[in-house]
Amino acid sequence: MRIIIAKNYEELSKQAANLIASQIFLNPRSVLGLATGSTPLMTYAKLIERYHQDGLDFSQITTFNLDEYVGLPKNDPQSYHYYMRTHFFQAVNLKEQRIHIPDGMAPDLEVECAQYEAAIERAGGIDLQLLGIGNNGHIGFNEPDFSFEATTHVVELDNETIQANSRFFQSPEAVPRRAISMGIKTIMRSRIIVLLASGQNKAAVVAKALYGEITPAVPASILQLHPNVIVVVDQEAAQHLPDRATSY
Image 1 (cartoon, helix red, strand yellow):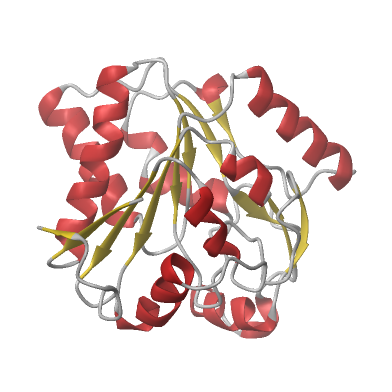
Image 2 (cartoon, rainbow, N blue to C red; image 1 turned 90 degrees about the vertical axis):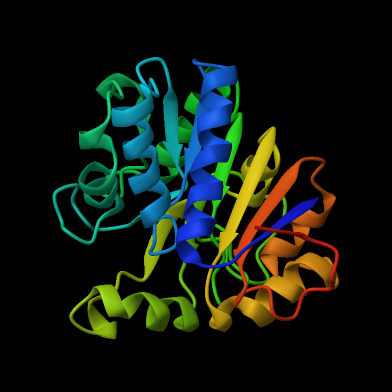
């Protein structure tokens, strides 16, 4: 595991974008796993800059998003379909047929999960997976105490996750209670994983995930067993880490 400590959120985002850009330059047909939430927002902005300024080409890239809320249509401003199109997809030359996001409105959610997992396999698996981390240690929407063996599945969201995500909705009651998420097993099959964390509110869970016991109670702790993980944190999120990281 490689840990990069950036001086602030902007530098974190620059480092993350550089890692993704390097993957694309090395393999223009890469399969990228993408995350949503507040942490990767500037990473996507930096990638858009690289597209316009450096000619970073997304035309042969295939993407799979980690998750989507159950019950939100694609045009809902709080859906992850809407998030990705607004903050990234519409600003670069990704091809529509190469974009994949779970359908939270699918009539049969179990079939949707199976088909999504099969699509990842047909694409050859994920070359680089971008992750954030929740305050309770979740990655994707894989909540504490869920099996490390899960592939793409329907998740019942924890109260802590609902409260954390309520800032994006009118009230906690408006937050969907379920989501489709890539499972831990799916994430761990990725060839490279890039985990981002920003802010002092993430410091305790980052230290627990990276240096604590490997347990489903802290889903991100499983990343300790992956052969190629790059963790990019800002100084606030790195407060409880030992002095074994590279600072920028």
